[in-house]
Amino acid sequence: QDQPQLNDQLLALMTQMAKEYFGTAVRRDCELSSLMLHFFAIIGRKLHQNAPHENISSLRQKEQQERFSMLCNYINAHCTEDLSLDELANEAGFSKYHFARLFKEITGTTCHNYLLGRRLLFAKTLLADFSLPITEVAMRSGFNSLATFNRIIIAIFNNTAESTLTFEKK
Image (cartoon, rainbow, N blue to C red; front, top):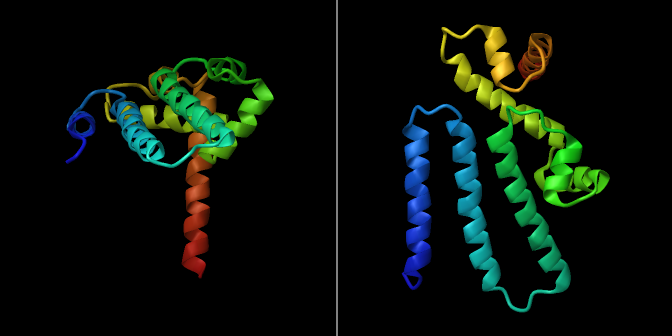
């Protein structure tokens, strides 16, 4: 209540999230993820502003988190394109090796797996259109070939089946 501008900003983002969530637009999952990251970044920044005396390492950490938040938004928006580790590291302003290490540390997954996850979310939205051939779904989702797309889908289902079987045995 004491910060009406912040309240209005967060409410506007929540309204956008609701529109995306209940909408039918292609890539709405990507947009929704991006809006949620922005929402929590605003809250995090506000909480961090209220913290007493930041030291240099926390400023560096804050800067890195902001860069990675922007980079995740970039990946979400461009997940269907041919993105290389070199290009993403350059976009974030890090060397390739430092970027790979920091990405895993900050997000909990490798950059490659994050990108695959985004492509699979996009493919999932395309698969809802039964008129699209599976090859077109794979290509539009950023996969180089139908074989690559199939291999990844099969690996996911095998891992799910194995974890289900392990769970049922216990």
